[in-house]
Image (cartoon, rainbow, N blue to C red; front, side, top):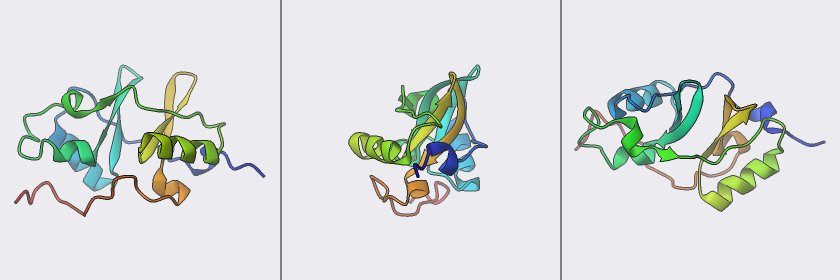
Length: 132
Protein backbone atom coordinates (compact mmCIF):
# COMPACT_ATOMS: atom_id res chain seq x y z
CA UNK A 1 0.00 0.00 0.00
CA UNK A 2 1.36 3.43 -0.95
CA UNK A 3 1.36 6.03 1.76
CA UNK A 4 0.53 9.45 0.42
CA UNK A 5 1.47 12.90 1.68
CA UNK A 6 -2.20 13.76 2.28
CA UNK A 7 -2.36 11.09 5.01
CA UNK A 8 0.44 12.63 7.12
CA UNK A 9 0.29 16.33 6.26
CA UNK A 10 -0.98 18.99 8.64
CA UNK A 11 -4.04 20.52 7.01
CA UNK A 12 -4.78 23.66 9.01
CA UNK A 13 -1.53 25.41 8.24
CA UNK A 14 -0.48 28.41 10.28
CA UNK A 15 1.06 30.97 7.92
CA UNK A 16 2.66 34.41 8.01
CA UNK A 17 2.70 37.24 5.49
CA UNK A 18 5.87 38.72 3.94
CA UNK A 19 5.16 42.04 5.70
CA UNK A 20 4.81 40.45 9.17
CA UNK A 21 7.72 40.90 11.57
CA UNK A 22 9.96 38.02 12.55
CA UNK A 23 8.76 38.62 16.12
CA UNK A 24 5.20 37.78 14.97
CA UNK A 25 6.51 34.69 13.17
CA UNK A 26 8.44 33.62 16.28
CA UNK A 27 5.36 33.88 18.48
CA UNK A 28 3.31 31.81 16.00
CA UNK A 29 6.07 29.19 15.95
CA UNK A 30 6.14 29.01 19.73
CA UNK A 31 2.36 28.83 20.01
CA UNK A 32 2.35 26.00 17.45
CA UNK A 33 4.85 24.67 18.31
CA UNK A 34 6.29 24.65 14.79
CA UNK A 35 9.76 25.17 13.39
CA UNK A 36 8.63 26.55 10.03
CA UNK A 37 5.81 28.67 8.64
CA UNK A 38 4.76 28.99 5.01
CA UNK A 39 4.68 32.61 3.84
CA UNK A 40 1.50 33.47 1.94
CA UNK A 41 0.47 36.65 0.18
CA UNK A 42 -2.86 37.06 -1.66
CA UNK A 43 -3.48 33.29 -1.40
CA UNK A 44 -0.15 32.50 -3.06
CA UNK A 45 2.73 30.67 -1.42
CA UNK A 46 5.70 33.03 -1.72
CA UNK A 47 8.17 31.47 0.71
CA UNK A 48 8.85 29.62 3.93
CA UNK A 49 10.47 30.93 7.10
CA UNK A 50 12.13 28.68 9.65
CA UNK A 51 13.44 28.85 13.18
CA UNK A 52 16.87 28.65 11.56
CA UNK A 53 16.13 31.85 9.56
CA UNK A 54 14.96 33.64 12.72
CA UNK A 55 18.23 32.90 14.50
CA UNK A 56 20.15 35.01 11.98
CA UNK A 57 18.09 38.04 13.07
CA UNK A 58 17.76 37.23 16.77
CA UNK A 59 18.64 40.78 17.83
CA UNK A 60 16.23 42.36 15.34
CA UNK A 61 13.08 40.23 15.39
CA UNK A 62 10.85 43.26 15.98
CA UNK A 63 12.34 45.31 13.16
CA UNK A 64 12.95 42.62 10.50
CA UNK A 65 10.21 41.56 8.10
CA UNK A 66 9.50 37.95 7.18
CA UNK A 67 10.28 38.69 3.52
CA UNK A 68 13.87 39.57 4.49
CA UNK A 69 14.55 36.22 6.15
CA UNK A 70 12.32 33.82 4.24
CA UNK A 71 13.40 31.31 1.62
CA UNK A 72 11.68 32.13 -1.66
CA UNK A 73 10.35 29.46 -4.01
CA UNK A 74 10.31 26.65 -1.43
CA UNK A 75 10.36 23.03 -2.56
CA UNK A 76 6.76 21.74 -2.47
CA UNK A 77 4.88 18.47 -2.87
CA UNK A 78 1.34 17.54 -3.88
CA UNK A 79 -1.04 15.63 -1.57
CA UNK A 80 -1.12 12.76 -4.08
CA UNK A 81 2.65 12.17 -3.97
CA UNK A 82 4.16 9.39 -1.86
CA UNK A 83 5.74 9.90 1.54
CA UNK A 84 8.90 8.29 0.10
CA UNK A 85 9.04 11.03 -2.53
CA UNK A 86 8.57 13.72 0.13
CA UNK A 87 11.33 12.16 2.28
CA UNK A 88 13.68 12.04 -0.72
CA UNK A 89 13.06 15.73 -1.48
CA UNK A 90 13.73 16.67 2.15
CA UNK A 91 17.00 14.74 2.17
CA UNK A 92 18.14 16.07 -1.23
CA UNK A 93 17.41 19.69 -0.36
CA UNK A 94 18.25 19.42 3.38
CA UNK A 95 14.91 20.89 4.40
CA UNK A 96 12.76 19.83 7.32
CA UNK A 97 9.32 20.53 5.85
CA UNK A 98 7.54 20.85 2.53
CA UNK A 99 4.47 22.98 1.85
CA UNK A 100 1.78 20.83 0.21
CA UNK A 101 0.20 22.41 -2.87
CA UNK A 102 -2.92 21.45 -4.79
CA UNK A 103 -4.08 23.39 -7.86
CA UNK A 104 -1.85 26.31 -6.91
CA UNK A 105 -3.16 26.56 -3.34
CA UNK A 106 -1.44 25.75 -0.07
CA UNK A 107 -3.41 22.83 1.41
CA UNK A 108 -1.00 21.53 4.02
CA UNK A 109 2.55 21.09 5.24
CA UNK A 110 4.48 17.89 5.84
CA UNK A 111 7.46 17.97 8.20
CA UNK A 112 10.36 15.60 8.82
CA UNK A 113 8.77 14.55 12.10
CA UNK A 114 5.56 13.58 10.24
CA UNK A 115 7.71 11.11 8.29
CA UNK A 116 9.62 10.05 11.42
CA UNK A 117 12.80 11.50 9.94
CA UNK A 118 15.47 13.44 11.80
CA UNK A 119 15.62 17.20 11.33
CA UNK A 120 18.22 18.20 8.71
CA UNK A 121 19.66 20.91 10.97
CA UNK A 122 19.05 19.96 14.59
CA UNK A 123 18.67 23.05 16.72
CA UNK A 124 18.70 23.24 20.48
CA UNK A 125 15.48 24.45 22.02
CA UNK A 126 15.40 28.22 22.08
CA UNK A 127 13.19 31.02 23.20
CA UNK A 128 13.61 34.32 21.37
CA UNK A 129 12.54 36.15 24.54
CA UNK A 130 15.68 34.86 26.29
CA UNK A 131 18.17 36.13 23.78
CA UNK A 132 21.32 36.00 25.86
